[in-house]
Image (tube, rainbow, N blue to C red; front, side, top):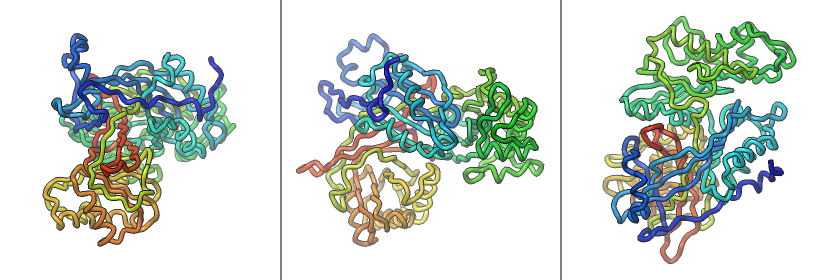
Amino acid sequence: MKPLLPMNNFFQVRGQMPVFPGVDEILPMYLHDIGEDHFHEEEGSDSLEYNGLWVSDHFHMTSVGVDIGSASTQVVFSRLTLERMGGALSSRYRVIARESLYRSPVMLTPYRGAHRIDERRLSEIVETAYQNAGIPVDDVDAGAVILTGEAIRRENAKAIADTLSVHGGKFVCAIAGHNMEALLAAYGSGTVELSYRRKARLLNVDIGGGTTKLAVIENGHVLETAAIHVGGRLIATDDHGTVTRIEPGGAFAAQAAGKPVSLGGTMSATDKVGIARWMAQHVLAAIAVNKNNPNTGDLFLTDRLTELAPYDGIVFSGGVAEYIYGLQHEEFGDLGPYLGQEIRRCFSEHPQLGEILPASECIRATVLGASEYSLQISGNTIYLSNTNVLPVRNLQVLHPDCDLHHDIDASRLAEQIRAHLRRFDLREGETEFALSFHWGGSPSYERIRAFCSGLKAALPVLFSSRRQVTIVLDGDIAKTVGRLLKEEFQVQAPLLVLDGILLQDFDFVDIGRLIEPAGVVPVTVKSLVFDMGSSGVRTGLNVH
């Protein structure tokens, strides 16, 4: 192994954009809802690669995904194929295929004490993955670093994520809260795609090392998410049964199950079975209405589910799912094997809740990387309250499912925006993000004013703060929206409103400086990439 590189120097990736004959240097990409951009092998056969037209409309890029979870860390390298959308006049590109180049072994996430991730050992894991993949750092075009579960509780988690993703703006950095982690698992496991194909109401249960994430999906749309404090590595022991790790949720579960444990104490296999059985019963109780079920209130890390069983099917993902489906039998000193067995038994005894369906991915149900460059140029009717609002980098995009084609109800719009922030674990005034909307219908004063009223009602704290507000639309109304917010609604926050830009959930954007005299700004779009199995590749799916 080569000497370790400092983490702040390890990821330095190139920033070259491909340019093709007859295609502008701008390569924007817009991805439709599920079902509209699936890739089939016959559409891109090898014989077509020698066709000049096919080559000019397609290009490849190398992407990497680094997933740092409560129990495990993994690195995935992929080769993405992007295709120009529409006719010859379109310069927008979408991902149509993904080839797996290398998947690292799933490693235990390294910790140093109770409060820190071991950054040196984590760096070794990532560097070794690059070496084993045989992929030079400079050959990686884009990627994503995702921290989830108990890993996000560590005091240096944010610093590590930022360090791993500092590559000239090319990597996406996301610290996923419980709801967002449930979304990522629902897409990464293939449950969203399966729900769309079957036109079914499914439940995805993602059981990791520290938490269990729940997502209810209907016809390819995520209806609701939740999380409870149940996981396979909340307690861990060494080969002699000595407790070497115990998280607060593990201590609570052990006490409640009548099997109290302490760091340095001993724990038998019988103890692990008892605690795992208690956990499995509470996972079941979280999704079902039954007066005999135990109270799960203390375990919920989010709001409770309201979309309860029965479901058309239940899909398990996460590390514990490997044991549920019998794909893994090795023990790692934690509760994983015992929890997997108890979950399987518990759900099998209650078939009325829903048929247990296979997952396309279990422990690898995660983000595979990000696609870039997709670069869009804004319209020239943008609104900037001052030039200090530019540039901005790695801004997460939220795309609430709002109907802006008909009469606009300001109150309903405000609630939809607030609900969407909760879905992604974002709190008003704490984190910067970009709100994206599809505008339809007439740009009348009444409709635009109702839209602005809904925005102001949804984000009263943010709009009165010093934190920047970024709004992105595809209709040419940015200047009108900005002026109304500033002049009629007295918004105090720095304001950036762009139009002519197409974005969606799971996009991250870099917005450059104003280009004069055109009066436009460049917007680089980086979309999270998920593997959707044989039916295609999806990036940046909308959440409803």
